[in-house]
Image 1 (spheres, rainbow, N blue to C red):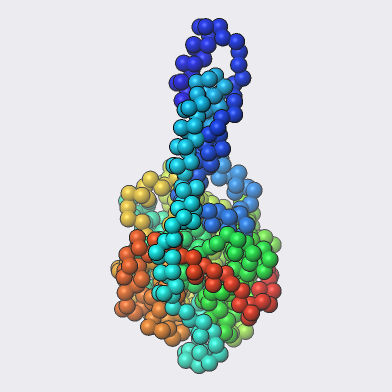
Image 2 (cartoon, helix red, strand yellow; image 1 turned 135 degrees about the vertical axis):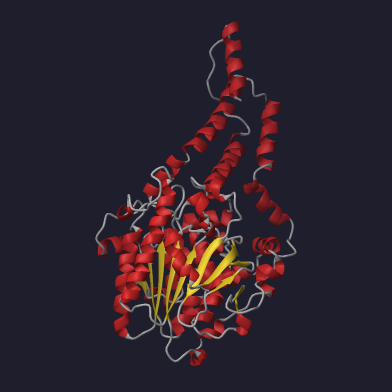
Length: 500
């Protein structure tokens, strides 16, 4: 394009043509912008989905500092986009971009843009898989009835569930990434460890991974329905029965601690809707724990320090505890290295910052667990460690893509035999596996779309194959409506859980 523009400039100089405008509006301008916007989102997040985009914007995206950081880290992509966008305008101004070529470009940008073609195709053709998921969904709402609690073990087990940002199992390849996962290996070896956990459609961001692990389903979204319940009712998937709902009915005291603001992608609303009584986001953590914080809120060190205080205090009230922790060091594009770890990861100084950040977070988690064990706080406790999703495009994506990428999941505790689950699984299987480990009876070891990995039944992704499962997820237009339909019992529930 620039070669055409330079050639055109040279011809103008030779022929002494009168000076013209450097930029003109062209017919393909808006289609070009939309196409380049799609290219940008694909480069930053690795995928594009209208519902996910609107949900993130509506529920809360990021702090301004993180947005600026993202823009800075994608400078090369932005530069290429500007070159194309402005270059076409310059060619139009000089007459090189003829009307016929402009129309052809407009048609190309419209036809080549999945942002437009996917929703149009979905609206025109009813996908035969549109109700497939509804026929395979296992509803466990009955487990929230008081009578169901009678079958639970006499002394309920506590639960500590740690979502580790982007810490996928692929990082265990030490030859490529060093020992960034080393601090967690001792826990993985004494756990039920899933080594072949794939990433399904609509489980590829933090809140989607949380929903999948807590509710046994990908995050199915419909923009207008989602927006209504998030903005008007402060409800997140109110029609779905999740882990927190089951545990609340059994008397659990549930807390969620994250370094991100609670409004980030609706995480606070999700946990408040589903039985959590104490919510601590970045601002609450920073206010309670000494430290410098981070670009987006609280550092992982602060998050884990506060979580430890909650764990220690919970031992006094006699109620079973469910403590969910979200740490964020491995977040793309280049990670967030906690000050506490600077110079202490043991990795080469030349290693990308994100590798230092991932190892730092894992070191802090290991310290948290060791300290809790030393004080006797892990007795009768199920410990779950998992990546929330595979890493989004980052400074080490090329290296990650050399391998068959898999999520990280390990579950340990009293009565759980160390073993490796090598069969194909997905994050939705974590939900019934946790319930099973806590002694909650399940219908045939199933819940929602998940199958307990403590049993011997094939998972849904094994039975269908990932491709068909993903196709059914994209096609669904039945369950998405029921998941976001308000249950009468939920009307006042969200108001009970507020930031502390």
